[in-house]
Amino acid sequence: MKTYRIGIIGSENSHARAFAKVFAGEPDFQDMKVVAVYGDEGEGPSLRVLEHFPEAVIVDTPEAMLGMVDAVMITSRDGKHHFPYAKAFLEARIPL
Image (tube, rainbow, N blue to C red; front, side):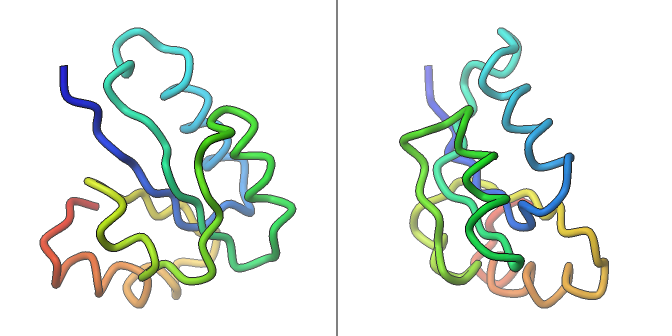
């Protein structure tokens, strides 16, 4: 079974942690693994996401995930960041 490597952008909200928890614990999502997290509010919120995937890394920029992930979730609280964060992944044809 292929494992899909997921990146989460926007760790400052409960959605990022909730999705990580689902991927970590639900049998229907056992083929998905969070491998990278970016948060624009410092490292603290990202560390809480990593509770479910301690082997994942915190990256300095969303673009640092390129080459590491098969898909990205943008959960940033402020929607004005969504397109700027998504742009590089759209250009690379990585599902969002």
